[in-house]
Length: 481
Image (tube, rainbow, N blue to C red; front, side, top):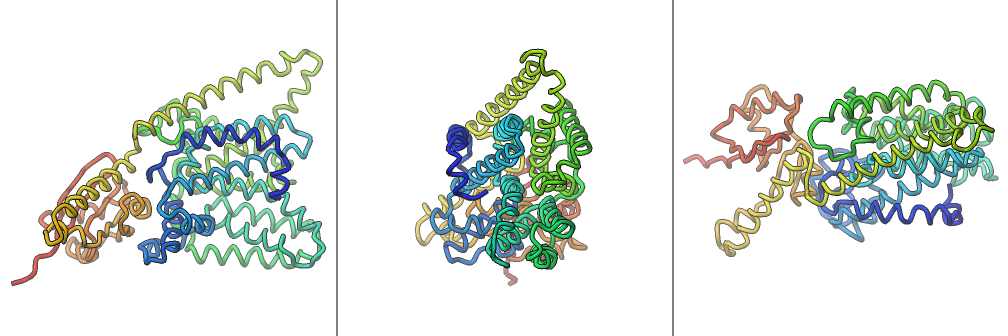
């Protein structure tokens, strides 16, 4: 969808304005609740804008969002809320484009219901608040069909619309494994039934080349958690993004029901979905993204359920035509009312949690470290120019963290990834040269590393032990006499 078409659809903009205002009120203004990959892209954009060397360069290549966040690094460096507003705009554009895509097929009612439920879902608001990749992936999927039509109407042999689709392939692949769906659908479309033979060879060569190039540059998807349980992510669609502790059994049952319903929709509607570039991208995105079933994947799954399932449901209701509006639509209105009420209660609970500064266990650990570091800096500044506190505060703070980008943004310090577990504790200590603090998440992958630190008792202070993990301080080595 072009920007001109978005502006021309003034009714959609009027509907989105109150939604954008309400979501903006619910956004956190601090640096917590972010995804690690979103924080990495934002941190690198800030470092480029400030023209300073940053530990972000040690975190690996970021995804395409670093280009989108780059103007924010020059205009509003250090302001996380600016990146959240940009993500909000991407989600608004995705909602309008998805609505127009479904409405184009004379399914205005289904498009309206699906878009409304997608925009007010608790996981959608959490995606905006956490700088998730899902809004950008949905925007690319929604614009896929429109981009292809623009290219077919282009008279040039190799114009801007071709490169726009190639860049969209690179952007989608860089953000998530689910992003592979777009280049795969585009490749098979131009391989089997090319809309324009002038561009067929360019696409068949350019798409695999750009996909391989992006995966090689990013070394895969380093931030993805592979083969994780999809039920908690699916449950977050109803339970929200700030649930304390593991999800309840009821939430897990709801997540399983949502996955089962989406699987039924995918099986029944796969021919209709695969016949369309946007529909096929949503379908394959839900399949490919299941190998890293995080909350970005869950939002794609929910979009597939809405935009594939509601048209199927409304077609089934046509058999009740002639029995009155209450028989034909009454029970559907009751279901929608219950779902919207559940979404509203969850969104209210998330807003109250944000207002009361209630954080997830990992964010609480990062905040405690940031507050302790700020206290140390304040004490160093109050100690005078020649005091020991000032000398300690002037030293660069380097922290090795399970969440290096999020930690760097929260504490305004240099964050590094955790080193691999060494064969013995002394070797582990040698790896930590130059590191002042360690934030270690309480996960199975860190047990070997934690065991090595536990054997270094005299050289390490345990500053905090919380449900999210531990904060360690490495004592400086004493000079030999």
